[in-house]
Image: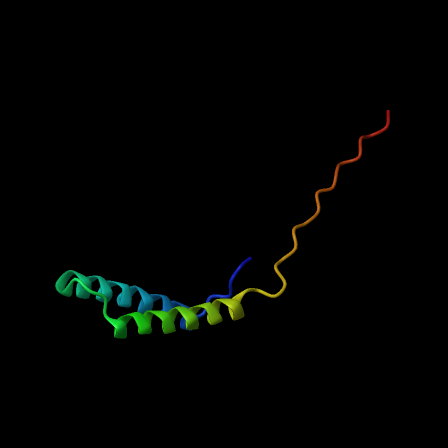
Length: 74
């Protein structure tokens, strides 16, 4: 289904990407996961899921039906 592009959705995706990078850097340094970063990721994913649910186009454009050409009578 087509999605309505939303600046909020784009911002949430960028925020989630930054959080994953931050989590990766934290893990490399401390060899453990940060509960604060994990909760931020969970919250952002929840918000993104809600935004995705509201951004699905309610009535996708319908495809035009294929019509056969009539053969000319001889």
